[in-house]
Image: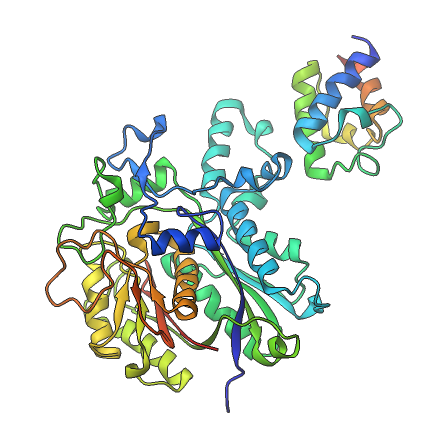
Length: 79
Length: 407
């Protein structure tokens, strides 16, 4: 799976869970500051991403996923 | 010490009759029933397969992503509160939000969320349970959301007294203003539990009508053929305001909330006290607070839910507390029983009866009980209403009387 494919998958989740416009989803964007995903919605994003990409994202890892790019890299190397 | 005068300056509702106050009121005056069949698959094995469901689904007014975080009881509270708030004209008045409080209750709370998330827990495990579960199911949720969206900082309160909740929340709102803790209180009740479990529970108590083949005629307060209440869903919210505060800003005033009475039966967890003494005391308290006599009351929007036992206990109590002269109605004949929202939606009907000089009908009263007082049966009745009473009772022995007068 390419980084672009992972971004597209995350964009789908972010739209469904938090109403984020898929056009706004890019590697450098911060989940909380720029995409306005609050902590409870971030939990939903993580659970949905685990299912979509077949990866485990432990709670202590979530705090390191500040940007979309962080999440893409984590998924790329753990899926 | 004289009481601080409290007036009503805003109304909001979403009910089985309409998505706002105007459409609900029009439907009431036309004598329309909001009761229909439950066509959902989950309902087909239930003994009760009728309900008064919302005329306008909340998802038509609240966007999808926000709806994901709202229990239905919270969504309807928000819809009613925003209508009442806009109606009051307070949004642009420069009100200090540290003087704005909320008192919005629910009888049952976020049961729909609780049950839906339990299904997810059973089917898919704990990790799939929504992180929004707790704020969706907590019974203070409707009040908290209203407080959040209006920016209320003088306290957010949520009384729970079953079917008296909406009325008690409004009565508590008056007390908050009188205690000097706020100038404005957004007050009311919400309920949305049209779901198999609450229906099965009420049906097991034999409290609900099983007139499944004739839904529009199922809610028939005081009719000899009544066989229980019809479950409804919705919300009603009013804006309560210190009278001098409303006057200073030139607000449109619907009515004075001249007196409130709250008592408890101490008799039985669900049966009304057959003597109705607790209810009579509540009405007398409201009258005393308003410095009015029973003879001053023209109209009563009764609790009358269409259950065999409750309806006539209230009539006997009214006879004792007020007299024989009043014109009753039960708008539940049209809305069904909105449980925690009932007292708030009926408060709005009571206030509009005063404003418009018209009492909404009690439909389906084809064969009235012996000894019944005068009821506006079948058709709305045009009559000057300077003073009107709204009663609510709840499982647990709660009695609430709210007395309104023309401003």
